[in-house]
Structure formats: structure tokens, C-alpha cells
Image 1 (cartoon, rainbow, N blue to C red):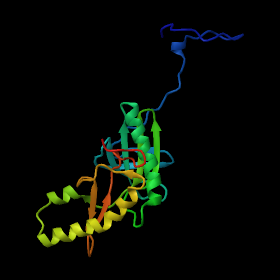
Image 2 (image 1 turned 180 degrees about the vertical axis):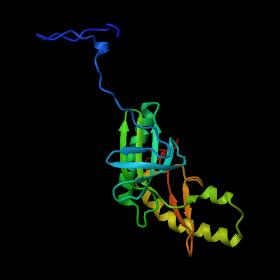
Image 3 (image 1 turned 180 degrees about the horizontal axis):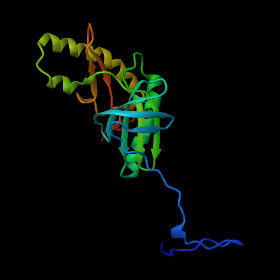
Image 4 (image 1 turned 90 degrees about the horizontal axis):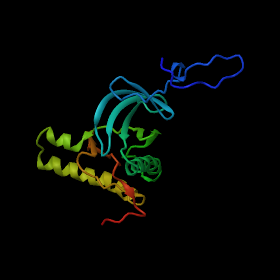
Length: 206
């Protein structure tokens, strides 16, 4: 060991170089990957597969304890205070929206969250389905099928968007952030990724 410094002496003690003392190990948060178990706030999640990229982070599928069998886990590594504030706003927003959006809930609800320095993780309820752009890439659709799907999308998401607009503006509604699940009568749609959302009470489009 090097003699980097000395511990304060007490009667009858022997001086020990600080560099030789056993220091407590600081555990850094586990890197997210398939099979990794990670605690996010009050819940423990086992990462099962990557789902895709969000506005400001990677989104993973996971199994967790508690009342939710499957969740979506989003991790954001913020490079500045602006990004950190945006991530913290997304956490507060998901808490609020689950109370104002009419049922059936077509947006994620917050399960748990954790902010550790510049790293923000949140576990959300996982909506079923695939992204709309992925569905488009699977093949062609008849005019009747396209019209029926468009009608169902508007009927389902218009009430959700109306309720959301009282609190926030999503600002990133596109085929990558709309989930669709085939149903016996009509497809079911959901809206995800509120990473670019802004407070409706104080935001003006420049």
C-alpha cells in the first residue's frame, strides 16, 4: 500500500495508512440487459427483452413482483439538467394521467420509479400489441381494412387525447408510438412514450 494519509490516532491504536483501510463498496446500478434483476423504487424487475428506443432512452420488457406481471422499463441517462427535469416530469405525468384518462386506459400507468444522479428508471404498465409502423411493414392491407382500422384508432384514441390535452401535450404522436393489438371485432390501440410531453398550462408553440 502507499502511505496516502493517516487515520486519526486514538489511545492504544496503531496508525493505519488510509490507502490500506477497507473502504465500503459503492454498488452502482446494474446495467440493464436480458436476464438482469434490478430494483426500481419499490419493485424488483427481471429484464426479459428489449422493446425499442424511446425519445430519450431504451425501453425493456420485464417481469416484476407485486400486482403487475409484465412491465415496460425505461432507462434514461441524462446528460444535463434539462434532460433530468424532462425525465422527472415524465414520472410525475404518468402518475397524473392514470387519474384523468377515461377507461379503458390506453396509456401506460406508472408502477415505480428511481432517480439516481443522472440515471432515471421508470417501470410502467406494459400495453399489449406492436407498434403501428411495425404492422405497416408486415404487408399490404385492403382499403376496407385500412378504413376500419383508421376508424377504430380515432374512436379509441380521440377521447384519450382530449383528456390528456387538459394536462399535457404529447408532441410525438406517430406510428412508432401507437401500439395496436388485433381483436376479434376491431383492433385495440394504445399511446406510449411521453418523453417529449410538455405541461399544457405553460407551453406555447413558438
